[in-house]
Length: 191
Image 1: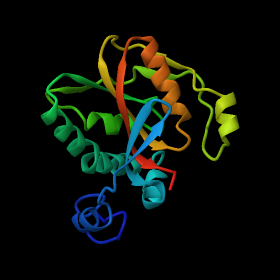
Image 2: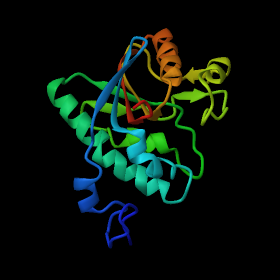
Image 3: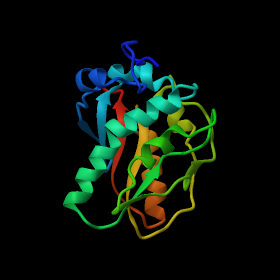
């Protein structure tokens, strides 16, 4: 097998050298409304990898990205806070045989953090890619929540562009008594 990034021989989809040199997270935090959104990379840094989400190799790439980012983050987070935290993925809808956001949330399972898979799904499947803020505001996701109420949760998505999706998700969760601590994304489009 070859590394997706450098094409060198590797047992992993992203070789150890690329993980250590090219894919070191450069974390940033953006405030969207009342929600803090923590991102591991700038979008331009991961663009080619993120575009694989609906391709065959996307499963392995998203799993590797989750292991490099989400897993270490949650381990460090729960060490400092031993309360139970639930992980809620934004629209873990299965497309192309898997849900790419579910791969991110699954990597976050620990003794004190539990993913709630498929509990926050969009009724509106409109594609936001390349669309304006106005289009996004006129076509909300219309999330439906079927999970637990009265819990502390972390929202997870792959990319933050305008933040409209995360704000809508937070609003729906708040209406069900879910305390959204913050959101995590792989990449932030804003430079």
